[in-house]
Image (tube, rainbow, N blue to C red; front, side, top):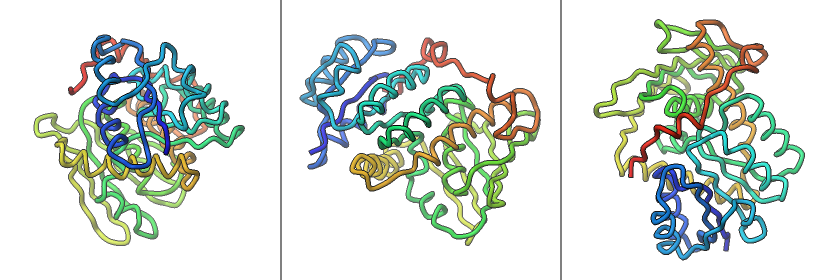
Amino acid sequence: MIDVGIIGLDTSHSEKFAELLSSRSDTTVRGVWDGGDVRPDAYTEAFCRDHCSSRYDRPEEMIDHVDAVMILTVDWDRHRPIAVRFLEAGVPTFVDKPIAGSIDDIETLRRTVERNGTPFCGGSAVPSHPSLAIMRGDAGTHDLFAAGYNDPFYYGVHITDAARTICGADWTRIVSADHGVATTVTFADGSSATLRFDGPTENAAFGLLDVGGATRTARIDATAEELNRMYNPFIEAFVETVRGNRDESGRLFDAATLLLGVQAALEFDVVVTPESPLLADLTRDGRSFTDTYEPLY
């Protein structure tokens, strides 16, 4: 049995992930911590009752009582300091999207994972959608077109993570296109991805067209059915990572830098590479985003 700790109840992910973990025969929600940034105290108490979980006063108090942890705070600036404690203690760690709002935080997490060898996973669940898994399996290079909606950082991560996953190679260059609402990304294997971030929010969906080993399309609507189609394999990937049977940390860290590179290209209308000095100074403020955040449920 894998005892999982959940840190942060801000988003709908906490309830959905806990539901899936509790429904499995090999996982349980052992501990919970929430900082009160979004939810009232009564919500946390009810959550713990519903999942028969212990409530902790500080995240690090869970370290000796859980086998793995999921860090789900909407404030991504909390991710690095909390995750480092668990990673250094050898506790397999999941960090929700977006993983971090600065290159410094990403590199600190990367170095901690490499130094300690602790399993690490997380990011967006969208790449786990079955329709994208088929695209990912195509051999050779990809010519990808993807469109998303809402905030280009908090929601844009869904299509940057998906693009990095489908193309299967590290990104090398980002160019702003179409008056600052889209970018073209080049990858080390010659693949390319045109990513658009201004899709309509009414009947919102992520849309993808991939020309690779075959021509494939996917539309992922914001419905309960579509969420379940990607959350189930997403949680399975988390369990496989905890057991040491899967390691996609390299892809996740590269995708996290890609997300920041896209923000730089959109904001400054410049060509961005992984070595661009601009990246080192670029940040996205998780605290200010959290102050205006409202959960779906």
